[in-house]
Length: 209
Image (tube, rainbow, N blue to C red; front, side, top):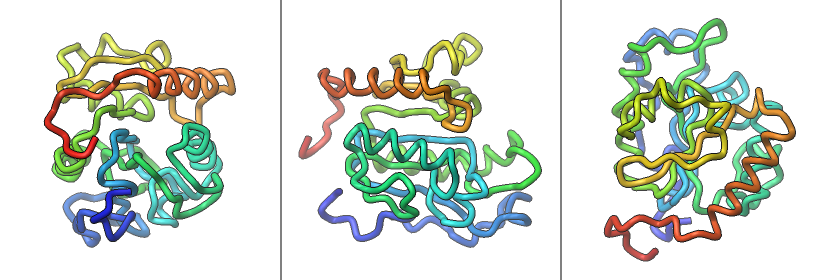
């Protein structure tokens, strides 16, 4: 983890009492990013699950979260048991498009736009090499904003565990763990291990890399 980092949870001190959209009416808490602020790998989902709403940590608190954390453990990006509510991550950061859980519906386009400054700030401050959009909605939003390809040309199943060139970094889409088959999980792990063995770093003036 970055030597100057004091907290893994919401390390950039983003607003934990945000009331900028209607999602705030049903949440338990705002779930901002979590992990290593010097990470080369940024994982972005659509919105917190009920489990993450309880723990306050992205991709934790339920079966899908455990599957996701197991993937990070197998990749050497986590030192923790997959069931840990506050995993010890190394070189990985986890976050969402929308920061609040709603038990009855996904976030609207307007709600995602309202949260966009949080994500943009995290991307700017972390400056990752690889962004992993987790799930179809995350892939669509990130591909629209950060690649030159039309989002309609990218499919979460067809492009799962492949590499897509972005603006200054690469995307590696992941089918959401809640929907992943065992085969898709193994495909992602194997593809990411192969990626780790390549010269994936871009020339972006990063220090200490």
